[in-house]
Length: 183
Image (cartoon, rainbow, N blue to C red):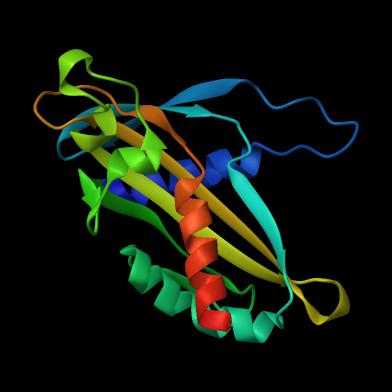
């Protein structure tokens, strides 16, 4: 099985397991998932945290949905998952190193700091999971939910993937570009 397919399953499963209904036992703090593939075994530490941001927009969901592919293109994240029925668009396994378009990756995510070399996000092999869902809101508006999650590992030597954290700026940038397109 390809590494990207496995990571997408792991990340999507982590997102799904991060929520619990009322009265249910709380989700565990996190888990380590081992990935076996052609390049050996890797492990990804998956923390169960809510990585989504919601905003209400005064535009019809269909109008928002039609603008989203261009927004993903503008930001530099290829949309590989497009589900019109759910109005869900994204990429579960966007592999990137150093920059998204001309923006340093460390502006968007935090993978720690590597001493004198600066933010790890700028030198790590990173796998981003980026999704946006547009749901009908009140009075014809749209509830836009954006989710960004990432794992990374050093590019120059073998090490397991570790969880990175979104700084919330990629979500904000996606929203800004979308609002500019809708005006």
